[in-house]
Image 1: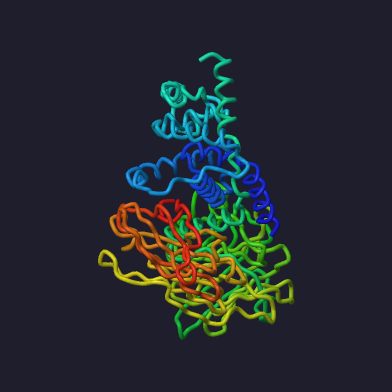
Image 2: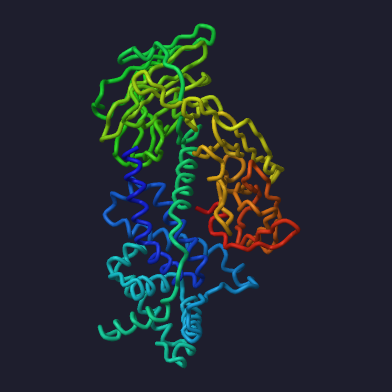
Length: 170
Length: 371
């Protein structure tokens, strides 16, 4: 049907255009590409479930980003202890990835994972996805002041990371 | 931090974290999961299911009735009338009538509210129930929100009538009404009265027919001469957890591809079962819910599909234990059912093929019913 076809086409275009960015966000939050893809997929599935509402939203991008952040927060709360017990490391490498960059990335990801959830989300949204403070605040559902303080604390923690400093990464 | 430092940090992060090459956007999978979420939402809000469909058969004389239709069956002691307000919905009114003497109205809106029933009016909001089918008839909702069973469908522009046959060969003719550039039909039938068959017409030409699942659910629509799948029932998994019996059963037949769960029933909207299969290397959740009417203090049961070559799935739970479940072959689709203890979730699922060969593992963000 015409209405359905256009809505599905619209959703498909929306998802294609944002998939990479949302996986990047998920990766910044989880440090695990597969988990990042799962989070992004979950976000898009939920967006599709409410597509007629999401498409009319002022900022559909903020909607899906918020789902990723919240889904990861819930995931983090529930599996934190268990994750420490996991015996297999997430696969971070891709074949075309230069080894040195891969190592640097692992160090950075490790440092990011040591931040609190809020600090990590603020840093990733602000400094990797290039969102403004207002946009970040909307995704996190908090005030701009809170974004500023979370991002500042997160950055301070990253800068105090010995591995990052020794590697000259930050 | 200065603007320059700010910019340097962005560039550094971008360089270090670039090279993340995700798989292509799984649009079809996200849409399928999204439809599942919609189904579960409706299932939670009402007794019934949301459907999609396609198909065809014979023109009853009642189709010539212009704007209203009546069905009375003394043996079953029910009566239904349905009236159309005309070609265009006024105030979103799609249809009105009576069921067993009780007046009803079905109104469509875009107000953002979910399905609701107030007085004798059932309101279906397009913001929560969007048209999702490419078929002649797309039954958006079928369930009880109050007195009778409300059925609302979006129809293709070439559909001029939908005939609903009730017991006693009584036929209700639903005339499409336009709202926001889309055509809709609606009816409320008395609770307990089953639909025998539904047919979509383009004037006198049969476009599609549907046989209901569980009495009222018009899941799949078939073209004239086409028949649905042969009847096939299989138990995927069953047991008792936390004092609650649970069971997942697939029920394929002329209604389409459906399965019953501890919380109700769901159907897969397709004309082949292959779409139920999980994509390669993935276990995909299909339905889930806490046992005992969704009480979060009870264990959760989950139904999922797996790739066709999977024979067993090992679910690694957050509590440290591993649950192994057999992947049951259901007309070429592998399906699993399992129980999650309260407070636990699936961290990772490992898939095994014939002879116990490990086929791969997947992270399991969607296998814990957390969405």
